[in-house]
Length: 122
Image (cartoon, rainbow, N blue to C red; front, top):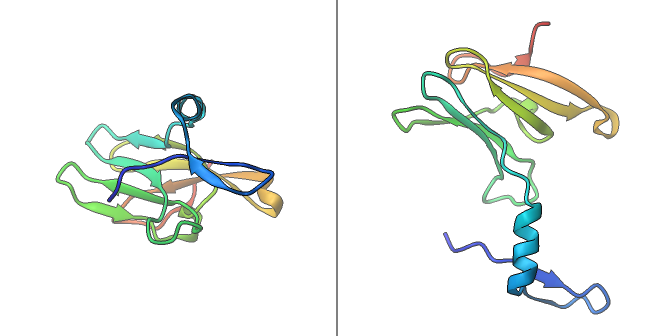
């Protein structure tokens, strides 16, 4: 894959140009850190964009200590995630926005490789 590049767009003309150093620095300062979590047994989870479909909702994925990668295929794992935490060994909790205009929050639990993501029990 190539290197990430930043561009600025002139709102009046619609023309794009590569971002200058000050613009790139301002963007980096505003960047939101990625959602990520790690369990005590070495599972790492994160939310990532779908590379071949840039308009698709981001996907929840994990990588085991041995390098195996698993994506969560449940609809609840696609888009809307606003929080991600380890939940004991080999399990994660994630908070996502959903409902009308994504105005509600729901907490889900996911044990990669064993269970589909499901609403967490209170």
